[in-house]
Length: 307
Image 1: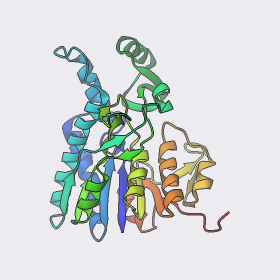
Image 2: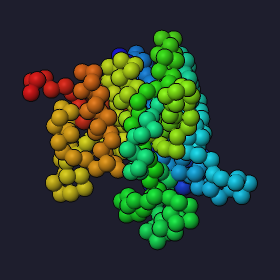
Image 3: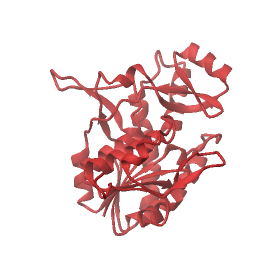
Image 4: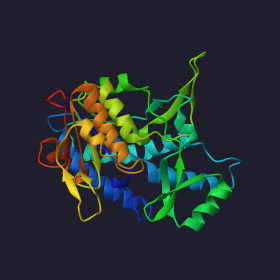
């Protein structure tokens, strides 16, 4: 079975944690333990988020006195792919000595006229109290939005239209290689219609949307969206909270999940099932193996009634 597993950024750096290398290494070790079991007997592609990491690099770049202007988000996204990809690849090689492992810097095509550029929604970086967030927004030209009990920077998140390296990923899978790619949704690029030249874009693509597109282009059998909760829930955080175990894309979409949290995961899972007729699931990283084998998580399946 060919599986695309989308690893949430909070799996490597959770809310409130210091962004130290040792903290992230600990979480990488946990992720590798959960994912390695899937590689045995399956073709495995792993994507990952980068929201906390790219936010950290953006702040460091903005504060660097040696820079006349901060590095753009596409360059910072490539840096996070290299960092997180290296950590995951090293751990997977140790856990899977019988497999080849490759971490691939991946580029994602987006449209220059995507409406998302005028309406930033993608959270990056740490959470701030409201007063500090307003001050930083004023001094650095950020857009900010509430996220839980704090405020965070938001940046454009255009829809992915293509994966530049999809043929390379296919070739690697054919050589029994576990592939880490599409980190942070991939480096966003815009293609000039006249010359074909590719240029970087000041945005962060949603990694779940990229994972769904990648799974579609690779003709994957299963899209696995991994996060920090064991299921998708209705009434999350309320006394009436209820876990969803088995659901169709249409039913899932009608429930209206928040754009800043579960919404993109739900849409990615639903889109893959709609377009391919395959299976997807959403659940906790630690349950990855059990989710694929139907013992955990929320399974998203085609509507077998045709209605």
